Image 1 (cartoon, rainbow, N blue to C red):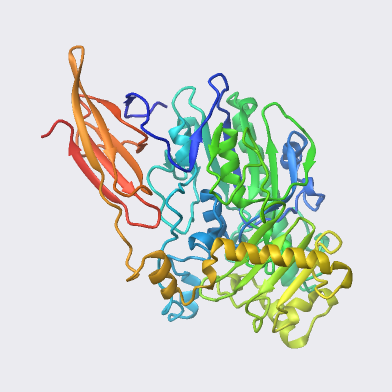
Image 2: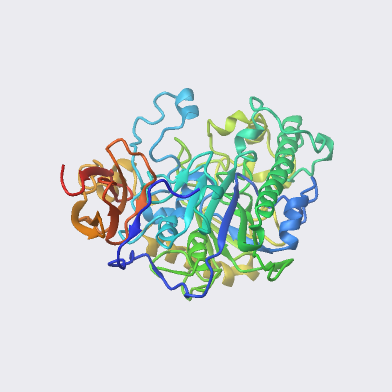
Length: 565
């Protein structure tokens, strides 16, 4: 439906945000783009060769699209990874690497009320040029919706989404308006294997699940793995529903569909672990013209690349200062520095328990540096302990591994360095760090990882977090700054027999996003618009509300009657 607040843009925008510039050709249509995002899922689906449960809708998507074999999350847990998705920046650069940096885990606090006693609450703080990428799409005319998980490790400005809720949908856009719509499926989340959560319809029997060799064969393990696959089957049906809805509306052949998971499988040694099981994700891209249908892409891509790629698909050139690189669209390119062909990731605090590992993969080989070695691979995480199989894995530390592939669970310490051939050893259990034939590759990846840590100014090493907040996030006192209020300038103009107002908004902080909405009174609650330059408002829409918000700072909202009271 059309926006309730009709505004006519006046003139050209005075400038375009530093993080992106529009170069959309005048005769090139703006494609619709849909993200089908699922949670906590490794590529355990048909398009990647796993036929444990049928996935006909994903099989169709892959047959009509491009399947990426080397797509990786920037963190093996959702919130840090999602901060990279929305900003195009490494979470270790912008201070979003610690899981739940602004909200304590209820499970951790229930287990230990003192768990967060020394951990402050704070938000990530990207560089001044960074915006959440949907804001740039909105400036270019897109209708942007999120249904509905955000979890960015900071409060997003009102300029990011036209709507973010469980009701947000592309169907609510104005006629012929291009859209970017995110739909997030929670049915594959870790919590869906908790006994307290209603189970998905049974698709695979416990005795028929392929048991990963890293796990002991126990009833609790088989139950968790079977439920994981049952959840995948239910998720596949959801994908089919999303595709059918686009098709019924006549939009499938004008919409780019991108399917992916927010990190690896939610089972232990998947989520929260710097292995392929925690970081390698499915990624399938379907174009309206079905270009390269059924093909496979070996290029290494990372979550930092997803936002820039969406901008590129929309004809918008991403800022080269972003960590990410577009791999799709008009501006697709490849880096020539340490990021070329490399996917980097971090493991830091998970709820109240600290880890500190850094890893890099070139798609085949993985090099990992453990900066805390007197720590078991399976850290004690209260939330994960709601999966009964977790205690079967803890037991291996005492009684030893039943199979050689389970050595990581049985170990109470970690080596400082690990190196795996992920192609020959997909479960990454054979540490080849001392193998003579791999020393040249190890040296290259070690150097690349060190370059990444140094170049990005890795904030995960700034501990305790009180020091991080005081010295890097909100110096010098650790108190969140307030974004400066907007300066509002308006000028009355005559448009025939009616009066209109030309409005100009400015903010002293160049990092601030500026959102506004106008109405007939202070009670107006219409959608927020993204300010990109002077605009004209009809004379009866006299009350202007403005919000300025730099990511990581507190927002400031002001209001004024155009033309005075």
